[in-house]
Each structure stands twice: as structure tokens, then as C-alpha cells.
Image (cartoon, rainbow, N blue to C red; front, side, top):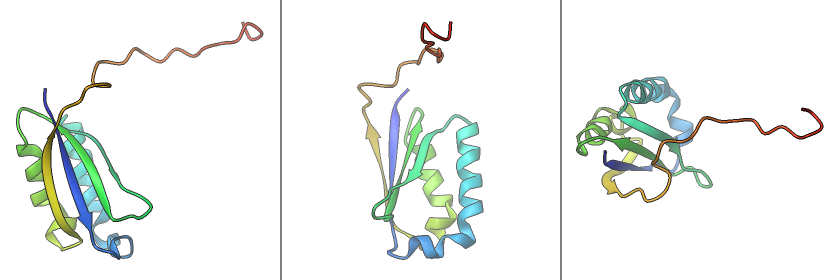
Length: 107
């Protein structure tokens, strides 16, 4: 299934102003993740001037709807957003379960 990257550009004082809307934004992100639409999401750092959210679906519709409904966007904290198809070349195959490696001494 295709991936879509949602890029956010934020106000210079985004960190100082996000508090009022952060819980709503995170709730929306967690709900999209629980539905299987949102794969990964997080803020860019140094400087904290944007974010990257990765969606997976048949089209860009879920990513676009997320941005349009996001309280950060609705309240002007995100100055610009765009969705682009993302061609994943490495890392999108199922990962094997984690197996802890034990040293010979602890066996």
C-alpha cells in the first residue's frame, strides 16, 4: 500500500503557542494511527519549525483530511502544508520479532 508524507511548516514561535491545541492534535494523531492511516509522526527539531507525518493508504486523502482538520492548521500555527507520495525503498517489509541476544556468560 502506498505511503504519503505530510509536511508541515510552522510559525517561528510554534512551541510557545501550541499548548492550547496540543491535546486535540495528539488525539487526532492517535486516532489516525489506531485506524491504520498514520504510520509515524513527529516534530522536526533544531530548529522546531515543522513536522513530518507519514500516512499509508490507497490515496493521499487521509493525509489531506488530517491536515484540514488539524487544530494546528485551523488556528494558524502551521503556515504551510503539503502532501507528497513517498516511495519507500528500504524498511517497509515486515520486521521479525525482536530477539534479545544473550552473551555466553549469561546463558
